[in-house]
Length: 336
Image (cartoon, rainbow, N blue to C red):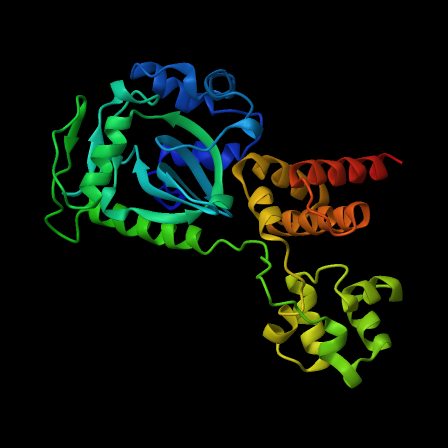
């Protein structure tokens, strides 16, 4: 199946590529060639079909590689909301299906082999886990999948058949379905940026600590100079998860209370920063800084927010431009 846990050929491509320019491993291209599949899954082929990954518009009917940490799968997009997408998992190998599945012939996909759409597992996942668009399917396939997920019937499109039922929980298909359900749940809980809520201004770490504030102890515990710790106390710089735990240990306060002092970001900034077009930027930044992708996105988002606050005085900002400006300034600082 296409979950990394399933270990199939396509999932190994998804795991190895991880938004690099390496494209698809040759063994998968060889398989596509043997089965009549085009070179459309190579990096050059994907760019020819969809353009620059950073400019792709997310849309219904697209097939995306979704990934978070070591879990990845193919998903068919059924609908697009502001911060999340409705999807169904798609698998190529090993074969598996259930009575709600839609089995699509290889002639209708870029893979050149049959693909199973697990309509029984229709769900919503956050946009931030989408990594790369790899195919686009016809409207008839999407509509038929939606009907199957709702338990409704309609004429079967050309090049498609309904799935066969799983007769026993011991069948390999049952294991495939269970693993996909687990992976979907994991993707649903992928950690996102803190989002500002109207009418709920956060407190600062300094106000939370009050008389318990011991600046020297915090500096020592965090291994940071006083000016940087003061920024953390005033909410000018976000606390990382590790720093939250460190402050909790040093002060005796619960980590959950400390986490609530991290100033959330404007919802429109979060929407931009977590859009798939920014995914490759955060992956590369994480690799360059030697941090997790989550931390790279978090500090990048707060950096752009601080930059906008200095330059606009609180006026609405064009967040795509602010993110680019912050990252360019960061690169320039490193060059110097």
